[in-house]
Length: 162
Image (cartoon, rainbow, N blue to C red):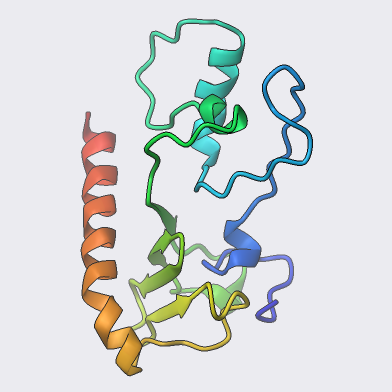
């Protein structure tokens, strides 16, 4: 697990993926495993929809009730993962990053470590052991992943200013 122990603050799947188990027989069939990228910001809108409560607060997340029903609505194709340095664990000091995760790829841009960026093909390398950043495939995919990261971080800045 990338030699992570209690800190688990880096952008690897062992940290970024949190199991989400839903048991709600009226709409969620037992054993279903939707593959869409759901985030913790989607939980509140989902619970509010299930409770039939109108939420007057604008939220970034969206209800994943349609996914629970087995529907396949238009859904996010990527998500942003961020971490900013702290001093709790000296081993990860100056390791702030912004990362984009798509259904297949992950690009991690370190904000304080020049030349240390990482890129993984999660389909062929689910354990993120082969950094593609300097490979031909990496150079091919990098512009699109950087553009998506820029789009996501621009949205994050915009939402915090509203």
